[in-house]
Amino acid sequence: MRTGFCLIAAMVAGSAPPAAGQQYPVKPIRIVVPLAPGGPTDLLARIVGQKLTEAWGQQVLVDSRAGANGAVGSELVARSTPDGYTLLMGTSGTHGINASLYPKLPYDTLNDFAPIARVGIAPYVLVAHPSLPARSAKELIQIARARPGQVTCAFGGSASQLAAELFKSTAHIDLLIVPYKGNAPAVAAVFSGQVSLVFGGIAQSAPQVRAGRLRALGTTGLRRSPAMPEAPTIADSGLPGFEVSTWYGLLAPAGTARPIVDRLNSEIVKILKMPDVRERLSAEAFESPADTPDQFAAVIKSEVVKWAKVVKQTGAHVE
Image (cartoon, rainbow, N blue to C red; front, side, top):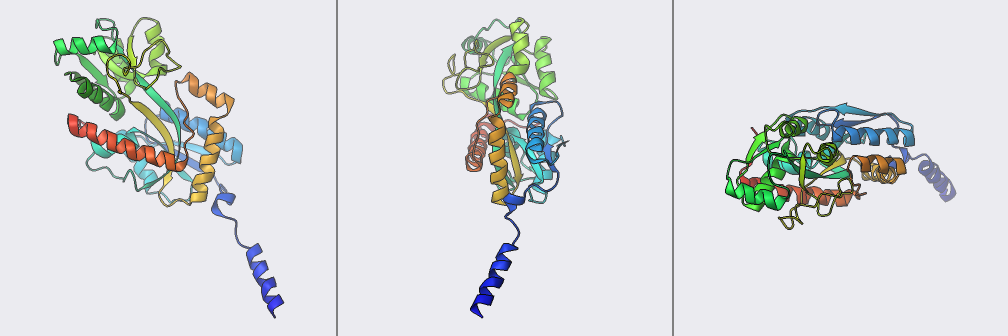
């Protein structure tokens, strides 16, 4: 009798379904991009999606759902079934800044998502129209103090807006911060001379800087960017400790099984180490951190705290 019982138990155990992480994925995966197509968030989602498709043999689709500074697409993922088949390419805007900038955000930044891994980190470069006589962040601060409220700085999104607000408050200067509908129009406004300054993407700004059509006053990382090594950091040229970087990372809805999160993280880390991916990201001025899910979660928490202080101190708000 005991032998029969053991045999049945063994048969039941042998027929048990594999763990969630082992059988995942068994159908196509969707990565929601909550910002406009053609930008860095979209680019990173497509790089990751292509490599996941190649590795797993399941199609990974990129679904653009822009609106409300990323809130529309982020809410869509937050409300999705937590099975690993609907993911979000979030940013420091959607999961760091928006929590304080929008009083009625339709998702809970910390509790509605399961962080997987950051895919890229990109500092800004503060660029000026050549008509502004400043050649460094230190000289800009001196000019702005002599001309309070007269030096203009464009922004095209929540991250570049708060980068400008943080610079303004840290340097104790009065910049006139001007909103534009997107980073590309904001940079174009500086290029045309309508506005004096903008915190722009390094990859997008470098060609104009090297052609002499824009002037780089400093980058916003804690060390010089390999993509623009000739430009000092703002921290080294006037504002010690100043640091602003935009990160992009993959998140799943809260409640997604940890084996699925871990499998996605493991594959993302492999992808970020591929030579062709590293070369592509480097060309776009991205650094790749290779986080664990817990490290990424800690980054999000720290970003929410950091930007909440900036919003409170500066009174920054959305128009």
